[in-house]
Length: 145
Image (tube, rainbow, N blue to C red; front, side, top):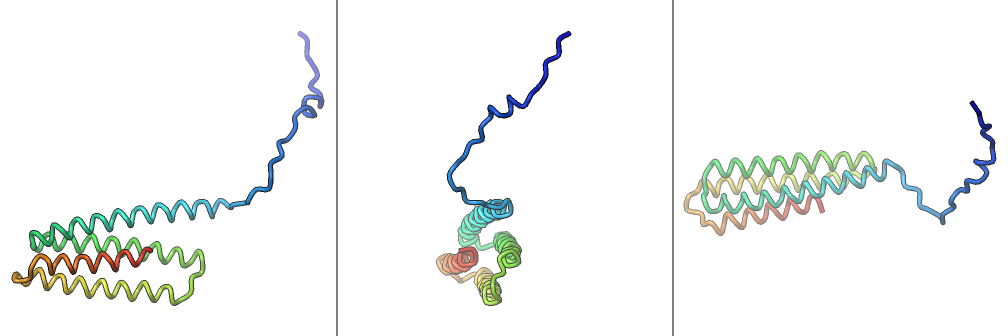
């Protein structure tokens, strides 16, 4: 049996590739960016679902459809506030940024109460309900843009 010596000559033949200056991006930054994109996509889908449910609500004007609509809005707000607070901790947003989100959430709550009253008032037209649904959608979009 013949054993060959392993020498340093094979290591000297390997040359390292030198590339131009690269921007160093931390793993945390990459993960944060991916998470933000995922949250944005999820919020966009939720707004689309809320809009579709709003159209169904305007046509049917039933309590069950109103419950579904309110549940979807609550889910959106929970998601937006949860991720908004996480962003605040990570980036150190100022207090005014949080206040704005809470103010919009209060406005959404007020609009949901108005919408509930409109659905319960059978004489309201579908256009009025659609208008309220549109206002709520605008407030929700304002939260995540």
